[in-house]
Length: 73
Image: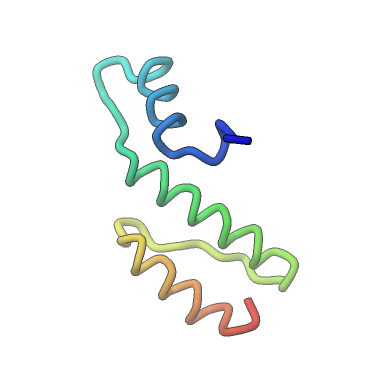
């Protein structure tokens, strides 16, 4: 089953149609938010309050998470 929640394209289109008001977000922005939230969900049970730096690429964000959480995160 295809999930609306798992599709960056569907969420991007929904957001832009509902809240865009002349400004649109990109698939990359949605994907980065998903990655960041996923990292936070993994970090929380480990007692780590993960906050990524502003302006990081998706690769940079995952590298920072690995540096803070290690292989067990």
